Length: 279
Length: 325
Image 1 (tube, chains in turn orange, green):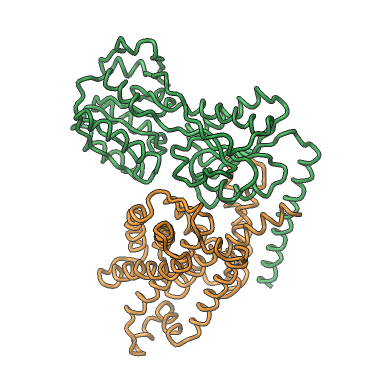
Image 2 (cartoon, rainbow over the protein chains, first blue to last red):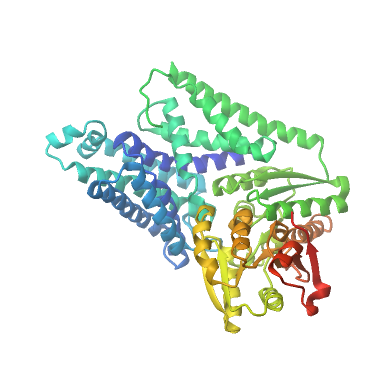
């Protein structure tokens, strides 16, 4: 039992961290309808910044709001590229993600170890899973309540019915940029939490984060559309799939194929009659 | 209805997963081999594969049927590598973890604090903050003897005045090596240009612009270089520039020479440390990290002839000639 519990605990904790990425992608893809690839870059930057600050002696808790700010700046860049220069969704994201690779490399180096340094998980008596649960539940709740406010409503209109935003007298471009700032802020927070969780920063950690976020999102939508607890459940389900792939003692070269097959099996339940999204 | 079937499938997946973990434990207990070692490999890569093979062969020679291995590969994804490390930590049948390369070493040290961890193919273990008086980590570092390496290069190609150092600036190992190389070369008043390439796709452009203006191209132990060997070799041969590598394995792929790291030897040395830890019950913190001895120089026969060079007298008895792969 104990090994199973330990493995599940790992799945639970990582699922929580990456559910923030899935939430961010939910806002990007479903709310403001902007497929934002710079989320990967924000994740990396959040991590790099957290590692650098902790190495310089900053309080671990203080790094969390700072990652939100950093992510917001990234979102602003992506947004401004889009609304001011008219660059398309995907290209904006790619440009910013590419630029952020260099920025993260300069900020955190290629690798920064936090093994003996304080992190939020070492400074409290609570176990890591409880702490993560609190933080992620708080963020998810905040985002959920935000969607119910007037600003949240306009943000949804930006994606689904842009003309209405203008007819309401709101500045559509500003809301789009604001939405992207929110998306990247949450992703940066996830990156910071990940670095504190594993205890080191690696420039390669943000490769593939988009896939993890999207897969979590799709799995949550297979359960129930909309925003809520299912996002967290979807992210955990994906981490479960990854863990399951490694439990199978197969030729290691097939790992990624097995992961793909397991995802397809779960998503195949999605009815073909529902509205087709890009992903 | 759709939602319910989705939740049902999720529960099914969960139960299957739980069953897999429990059954695996049952099977392991029935066929319990004396020592089971979990090998966590960072990525598929000639050097790391050689480390793994060296480790496995040496242990099989020493412990014969008393040892079993569980080999898992994270394929370069940090999250997966950490997942595997955590699974090894949770698995009670695994007695020790062998972590190959920096990401694996970090993940293993982060996830497991008690079982012994042996690392290999890590250039600078000290900077990872995992070595301290109560550590459970020990192993082999692939720190290069840059002075000896450059000495050999200078004897081979004495008239070279401009060196190009090719590396991926995102790899910590590579940067550390490159900086030491640059420092040594500057002492000899040799001009250096650093060619930083983040992805294989950028290599042709970067090399085509740098190769015409350098006499020698040298690369530290770098994963990108290792994986892009055919591409780099094609270009260096086109421009008649000698290509020096730091991973002895790569000489057979077309580089001129190497006096660097023998990853298979690293694996073997790590295996001997594993025997000390498991059989002789030594503690990891009693065993400092070992570095590899650098004696032999590996030279590619075809490349040497193509460039019109020959083995210098002083190095004759240290040189091992390698055939092109």
